[in-house]
Length: 462
Image (tube, rainbow, N blue to C red; front, side, top):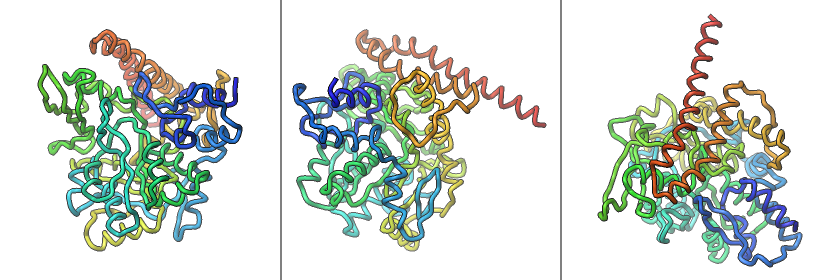
């Protein structure tokens, strides 16, 4: 087996590929395509091409799963020398922590939560720190709902607001960055930002032109089939979905109780349908239906290599506000100044906060992504499977019930795409629901057992 084939099997064959598009930037012999399960992977353009050792090493060093540098290494080199910087093992580096929302304009109204992502990007444009923003927008390509695009003014930028639980890859837009001089900001999930940092270490043009990296908090990445499955439950069959708003705010409900809004063809006519996410199968994020498997092998919760990280403020004192709020972790002094100036000008409604509050806003995410990653790594090692080196040490030092929950999440993640593909072939949503329900019920039963165990422990403590 060639060195390239070995590397490809390790990363793509073993489901450690995040589908970012980095390899397609490294080499014109590689292109990004969606597989039958709705996940992006790199594919060879010329299957006869023989990669040199230097080319293979470039692929290795720009891939999150094989690079010799981890998030801590990159973050330290970027932020350690920043004035007034602090460090937290959970949050990474920071020089400002906030919770709140944007007051000016329609940023909050148009966003999924507090409006901060689009607002920060617009401020960077408005104050002439950048010429363009690379972010996810509605796709103009048939068969795709979203893709990375480039916005060069605030009007274009506004059209890309809101969270998209949908796979994208950035190879084409980063090639544009390399070909068209300018100052760019890019918005991305942890794996995307990290791989852009790794690419920047190898490509001086990318490093010079990507001036700001805006990071999002992400529980896990989804395949294209997630949107398709939600739509199918609403009566829109696969292939007939035209658009989706994954985070439609509900005026009469907490921010965490959002709905989806879909536009698609039903009985030959275009319809707009709104459904509460809680009424649909697949809305429980912990179950991990249609999860990109690589998401289970990252230990970066807070997008530690981004210049600023933004997420939902999943805190009871903030979620009661249906309009939404953000957590904001700042690392770059320019972004810190933009925020502080906006606070003074009453353009933002924020609370300056602390590490514990930010951690609490994503406590379940931390447990799955960091604490319980140790068990997933242990399982890989026990089977003698190749796996990426992570900052978390492999071990089984979590409770038995939490181990079983992790086992069930892995089973749901691995079986969902296969069962759904069978449902597509049979043209039967009922088939998928019938097959997935026993897995979902066994997952729920594990949580019932955990609640009983916790109740017994509380009684015994008394």
